[in-house]
Amino acid sequence: MSTCSLAYQPLTGTQIRLVRLKPRQPGDGLELDLIHVELDSKPHFYALSYVWGDAAVRKSAQVNGMAFDMTRSLYVALTYLQDTLYANESDLFEYEKDLLWIDALCINQSDMAEKSQQVPRMGEIYTSAHKVLAWLGKATTKKEHEKATTVLIDSVFWLPYMDEMETLGGYSAADLLANDDLEEDELNVLLRLVDATNNGSVDRFMEHHPFPMIEILLKILRNPWFSRIWIVQEAVLASEVIVLFDGHTTELCQLLNAAATLAETMRAYAQSAFSNDAAEALMLRNLLSTCESHNPLPLAHQLGDLLHQTTHRTASLPHDYLYGLLGLLTHPGDLPTTLTPNYSTPFAAVFHAYTMYIVAATGDLEHLPTVRNQLTGVPSWVPDLRFAGQRATSPLTESFASFSADGTRLFARGVVLGAVDVVFRAAEEKPADYEAALGILERVRETVFARACGVRGCGMGEVWGLVGADRVLGTVCEEFAAFEALMEPGEEEEGEEERRWACRAFAERFVQGQFFMTGDGIMGIDERYADPVLDVMPEGVNDVLCVLKGAASPFRLRPVPGGYSLVGSCDVWGEGGVFDEAYFSARTVQDFVLL
Image 1 (cartoon, helix red, strand yellow):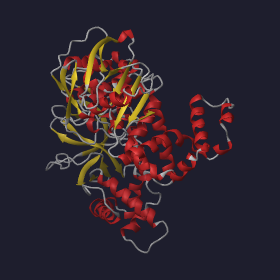
Image 2 (cartoon, helix red, strand yellow):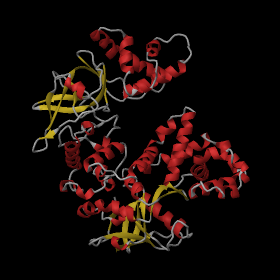
Image 3 (cartoon, helix red, strand yellow):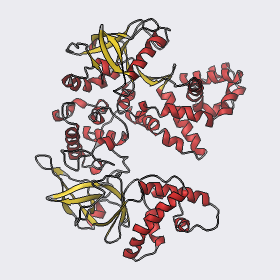
Image 4 (cartoon, one colour):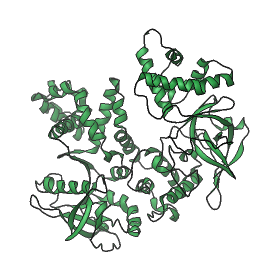
């Protein structure tokens, strides 16, 4: 947020505000002009995309001759644009002293009415911008700056063409120019590589590929900018996104392609951690490819899909977990008027209204559970979108869910799997090593699995087999029988290292949620992080494990007067089958009221 003594003038018609940077001498403060223009007049401007940063760390600038406090992150970005690009006549700016659109300046952040009016226009603004400038910040050290130079040149321009690198030595620029099959962008990159080959640069690249460049490339891809909810809209709608990092510029699509190429290469080296650390950047690449085409689905389905695709992203204001996606809808103006952005409405009430709209239209109850829920003043089934989890799969049935007139009750139908008898959290933190992982598995076995053996009348190997069929854990290791051997380690055997790695993967999975077991031996783990209230069942109350129509995963519900409150979704072991219409047809379906 920004604080200021600047007196904003109201926007009228199609007006937006734009920023003009004023010339300055070294050591001078930052001076800006803020002007009104009609967006319909097609002004030439750039949109600045950046991370707001710590609101408590501020710098003061002069805007229209008045003091204006902004976050340090924005101040540094604007001084960089002024001193490095404008002053040096960078090729990035095609017109002298181009204008900028910056959300913190061009929207009066203290005027909730204006903010609610202007946010729905941001999709149009980013579409109208000549380019979007993505500010990732500056390197903190000279060494990091030098590494950034190498990485941005090597990875962005050369990684996608590694196959060609090894054979370029036999080619000349003339050979490439004579190839009619090459696209212009591809031709330009290959020409650079041929030139680099003559200077020995390709050998240098191959010598350093891939591990030495990973550290700095990951630092770039871990930048908070990649996790912002707003960048999805900004990147999809922009004609072009230029990434600015420590004096270097590159196209966003090239950087993301390089990340994908390196991730694939690292998988070949069994280094999957790269993909995990660069997850937000790689997910953004996938979003760009899926959002470029026209979406024929109804608005509620579009919005529901976007919510599932943008989990784990961040927003300065909770409202923006929804409002930041509206510009990606095909016709956002067709949304019900009750969903018009309004920052004066408590965000929990916004989540409530949008959830009712999506569920009523789609019948998809997979939108309800989140890994944590700290909302107050709304029903338990309203998802806290600040903590949305990754969607595992789509429901195979329609829910036909409906709501009470006052929106407090959700009516659904489903099947009871059993009453929860045992609740157990294996550990609070991920295991630091194999021995710690083994300890977690031993506690799970003693507390839950051994009891399951007694209830189900089976051996421990069968219980491990049930767990091994889990859709997440089943990808870890093919031989689940090996885990019983790991419980009592003996002599080192072939594949011991892989099994130890799988043991840790299992243990980490168990730490993510809370174990439970029903009275008839169905085991499960919920997908909610530690919650001091929901972790403990009230005395004399047993949670109910059920499968609701319109959900892909079972739900854990807690009986309350008048119905049930939603504890969360979960994975279960010991209840086979697919939750499709045939599953429900073969069982007793009953009504549920969620409060």
